[in-house]
Image (cartoon, rainbow, N blue to C red; front, side, top):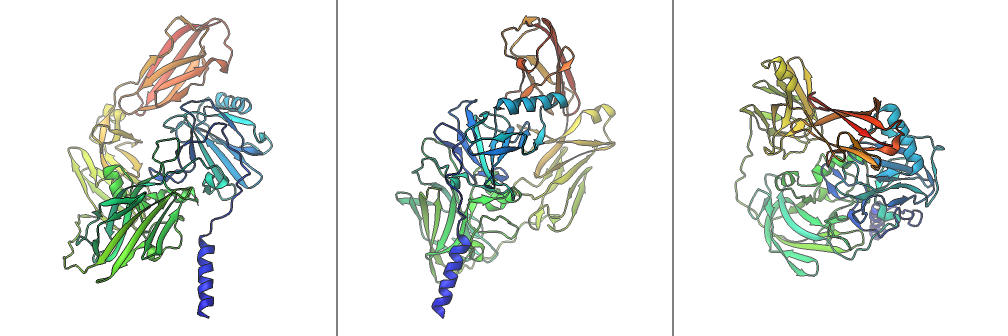
Length: 563
């Protein structure tokens, strides 16, 4: 009978952790160039997991993208940031492929988009959902061309595969798009975490950086450490693939104690809704302080990620006095290349008295609405803004509202309000809220105004203050001069920038008619394509009006000639 139940338990374990079978030969590659990645699926990014593969395009834009299977265009998205110009194709097998940061679409789609942009007189169209019979797609058909639009940091194709019904994103490597990779992950950092008041690592209640050395190949070992109570570990780790030096994400992370698994997660699939919980997977405080990410190998209560599989005690390891433990952390990439670090632990009871945590006058009860007011500044936190109860710092120094520091992750936005009744009418027009946590690079915080107050909503703690912007945006003719012949020019370009609150909007016309100027926010350049419409006559008047975020407006006019 014992053997029977053991078999059932063993079967349940493997069944519960079994990976879904995906069609590996259904989708062909979207590019006809060697597949080299600059970003992997599930890679750790700011406030989210990377939702696809970033395929290198040899530093070029304009490489054709081919439909990997039959289907139809189900969605088109045009936005200034994010995925930029993006295309979604639904396929008969129940999956959707997504293509981001495109330079342009194929001629049919490009004409459809341009017509809508001119009809609505704006570049960003948000999401469009054509009927399923409007744009049928055949396998191998060119659907667009690679680019660098949106939040892209360089030319590449962002490629995703989603479950059409659930919108869950799935690692495209499971569908057979696997680049060459014989390199094991690199472990850079190891941190030990005492998890409660009675826990210790090397007789300390604080998290501890643990040194290690390589013993062979990609295996590492630490000196023996002492510990007691519930503890856990975190690792800084990255992976490289063949043909590129990019530091990519790993596929899975596992912890074994005396040979038995207590922790495991992988990046097979996840939903967009849970992606924000990446801030609970990583050591968020370490990331915000040192700008590198350490993945923790235990799950906290508020963490709703579905990446975890068959955790024992949520990955927390109980160390008992007098016992020895062999702990191993194993990192793998998709091709099963492996690196590991072994941590010998001796259970030693500590007599160290626990040091009480710092408290302040500003206590957060996570499940309750909390509001504080000080010197004309109010901060209001909706319930469940914080993941757990805590104390925060809140002070006003020389007009700067110091709201703790940005080392605590937030689940929701809170409202920061400044009283402005003491300002005159001109100042009220020019005022805005700026995040000045980084003193060298103050950042405009989206500011809304009422009669005697200004406010913003944000998910970032840190330092904020009132700033004033009375300076108009700057406009410079970029690839032409006033009264110049432009018959040979394919485009008309203008450079714009704003030193204070930043560019909010712009409007351009030729001979009084609205024209589409695409904004490259990374270079500050507006571009008009002369192919958009045929101009009548040879003499033309170009006008551009640019506004910043507080309403300062600058306009420019220029005459050009074109046959």
